[in-house]
Image (tube, rainbow, N blue to C red):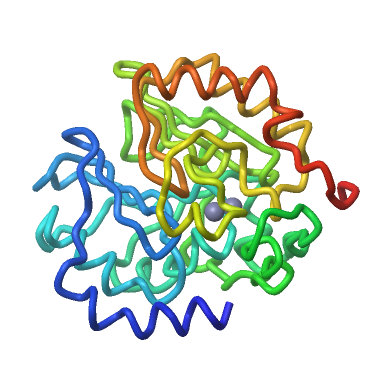
Length: 277
Ligand SMILES: [Zn+2]
Ligand SMILES: [Zn+2]
């Protein structure tokens, strides 16, 4: 998306000095690339850390700088993608190149990140503001990550992350995953749920927190998206770090996530939308 790239280019210098991850738990931190979060899993100074998602394009340097502040020159063991949308993989190729590390994605997402298949074009008819209107112009064809990409093993275990397990949360995309840790119920949700109404440009700018369904303009299967939200609610997460918006925790998270799970049709599915592909 030209506008985003242009915007991030002009910001590149400004933010260079303060690309710094914000810590959520001792071993979880996030860094926002304009509108999308990347997540650092691993304690500060750890040699065994992993990056989840890679943000929009042109953020490679800043993500590396935030990583360096947290982990020194130690590159991550791997990159894991919650899904392949352009705003989550924009800097993936460069990061994998620079760090020389593998990228893991759900087997059902493989085709979309290796240039074999394109996502459906964004649905401008979902309403709700600028991002929806612009969404048909968002890239649906990704950079080809074939050189670095590996499917996540069938048993759902993540290489280099023994405490975490993969939860397949399709709907927003076919191979969308979330990461869940049983010992403290920490959840990395990608775009299965988000804490900012992504269709509203105002809400995106001020980052007002509220649990929402996945970004509507890109969600291709609402039935699966609903099941995925119910799956996540049943896990009873204590803290959620989502693809868009600020992290949420505790009672407020539980209340809003359960509300969304039981009233998904009214709360998340746009009144007007295209027929599913
Ligand atoms: Zn997405
Ligand atoms: Zn997203």
